[in-house]
Amino acid sequence: MHNRIIANDRTKLPQHMAESFMHDLIDGFDWSKTPLGPVSSWPEAIGTTVRFMLASDTPMALLLGPEGVLLFNDGYAEFAGARYKTLIGLPAVDAWPEVADFNRDNVVRLSRGETFSYKEMKLQLNRTGELTDVWLDLEYIPITDRTGEVLGGFCIVQDITERMETERALAASRETMSFALDAAGIVGTWDWNIPDDIITADRHFAELYGVDPVVAARGTPIGTFFDGIHPADRKSVQAWIETAIARCGPFRGEYRVRDRDGVEHWVLAVGHVFCGPSGEATRLPGISVEITERKATEMALIDSEARFRAIADTMPQMVWSTRPDGYHDYYNARWYEFTGMPEGSTDGEEWNGMFHPDDQERAFAQWRHCLATGDPYEIEYRLRHRSGQYRWTLGRALPVHDAEGAIMRWFGTCTDIHESKIAAVEREIVAQELSHRIKNIFAVLTGLVSLSGREHPELAPVVGELRQRIAALGRAHDFVRPHSHVSRVAGVETTMHALVSDLLSPYATNQNRLVFRGEDVPIDDRAATPLALLFHELATNAAKYGALANSTGSIALETRIDAPSETYRMTWIESGGPSVAEGTTPSGFGTKLMALSVNAQMGGTLSPTFSPNGLRMEIAIPLRSLTRVYQSPPKAEG
Image (cartoon, rainbow, N blue to C red; front, side, top):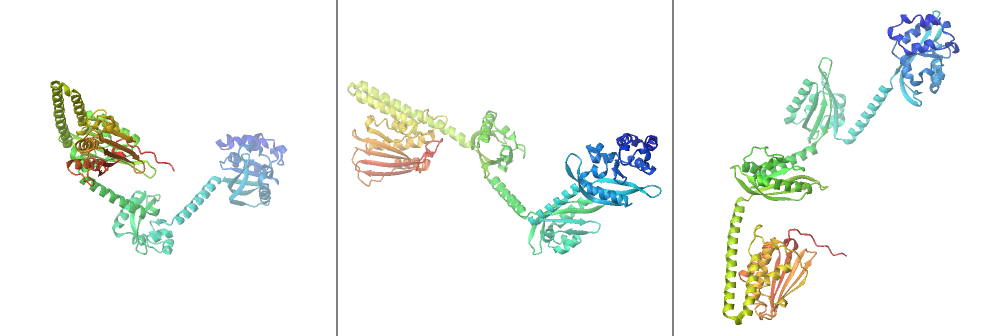
């Protein structure tokens, strides 16, 4: 019977069944050692069922005899996993001991001839060496012979684990989203049945549009919600919806709505139109998010930007802006008027092409340095005018930082300084010519004194002293006269004491006539000119009326750094000169010149007082006015 049922009938089975690995496993299994006995003893109904089972791709199993001995096809073998070879020929309760009671009950019910099924049955099975949850749809059908005797059962297995896990995850996701939407209080959801023109919506969506939440939950025509849209926005919303329906695609729009109290809100509505098999629009579900605060911020930003552009376009300077990486993306109207370039043509690094070829690398190198360090940008270069002429321009820029200190943007200006630059060159030429003539006068004076000394040998000591004083006046003149970066005297970057000592050298030939007490500080060329004017005037007045007007007077300069106020304080003290009446008030051009040098140019103060001993001048100058490379003094501890 074995050969008749399986081997001899193989050619009668479907072609793919002959390739079934379970066909060969069943064919070679020793059934005589099972409760079923040798195949030759099996009823014909079992052989027919086996052939039917092996011909199917659906997982199927036979539970034969009172103990429910297992036979199954390829699909069930794949369901059972790597241990499928150990299951064949075993009673169901032994094959799956983890669900023994479940299988025992099923075998009993089949033996009574029952047909039954399970939907979404959750079981724990050991298919991979450990128990895992599986969900199954099971269909049980009894097998009988011609007399009606029950021979066993037939089970169809559908593994729905993946589907159930997906559905449960989706349900959990929907629940989480529902909680989030409800907790946020600013998000509404809707679903529009387009053919029936019925929208169902949640409470938040209804309240945003001024619709009764009960009506929205039950469903209402879309026109009910359109009544809540701002009249000025209804046409736009209608057009967006019609476009989405025509394309069976996404819907998105920002517009205003009014709630039941008449309060206006901005909303962002996002949805998608779904279409049926014939292309007709069926549904438009979506969400609405309140964006009132964001729109207010955007409006304020737009207003701010409009005001910035209006201000920038009315400024006489060329105004520009870049991203943090230095990419130029904004120029005001003055830039395009000056350069004559089309708008947008100088964005990015194209701006560098507007510089004079001799200035390009220098300007770009300075810009790269500022981008890398965040230092302020300041440089003079020649910029091409719309006329084709290159004009001198002062470029400046500062970075704007966020709360964490990162650079968000650079804002800069270009100022046309061509006329002032040319005027400065002309002034420099005049100053150099005047200086040359004054030095010639000093040379003539030196020559006259020398000539007098030769004619009157008895005056040789006096002549030598006069020559030294005239030479010192010449050196002092180099400090007092205005300088440019071209004519600046080498060595001007000196200290306060050295400058005063050099300026007073024509008068204080005796070392004891000028005494320094206190702290010295460095000064640079920017401070040298006003300081030279100040001390030259003090020295000249002292030589005419004060401590240097005779051979017995002296001057002390007391200096100190006032760290808390970051101020350099100096006291000019004259003594031993002609008697001065108390209460004398200094006046005249010299006094105004000193005040201009200290007060106006350096931001300091002058406080002169006179006593019978001579002039006492209190001078206070901010430390930052003495040198460009300024560092705050260390704070006193305690």
